[in-house]
Length: 132
Image (cartoon, rainbow, N blue to C red; front, side, top):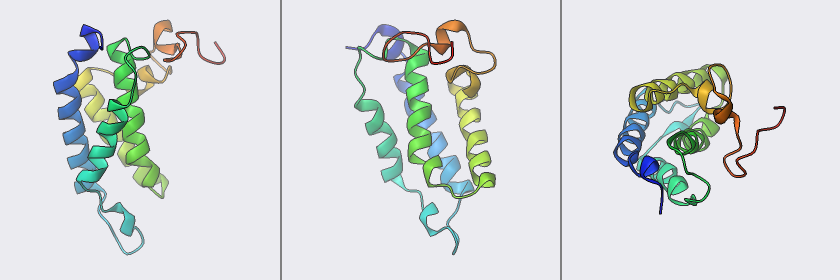
């Protein structure tokens, strides 16, 4: 089973997922050039399934689980976006949810600006990431 710190995230992960989906679905609407922007509940399901497939052994901290959530959100939503403007808009939507629900910034999760040394470790090995 997951550690207490990770289990405590359940309701926040669900709420962040629902709110991110609603924001993406209302802001990035399908057009004749972007008919694949028809986001629906299956997309939210894909994000949740990605979280459900993770192993407790590899996700022992809340930040690690939130990092996985952000990765799954990008995999499900951002990977379908076709231009830089839409990708930038998605990044802002994701950043908003990270701040509101987890008091984190994306740069902290991926080891960029404002990240501590522990944030820069690989989730699977616990070793410093490449280039450290």
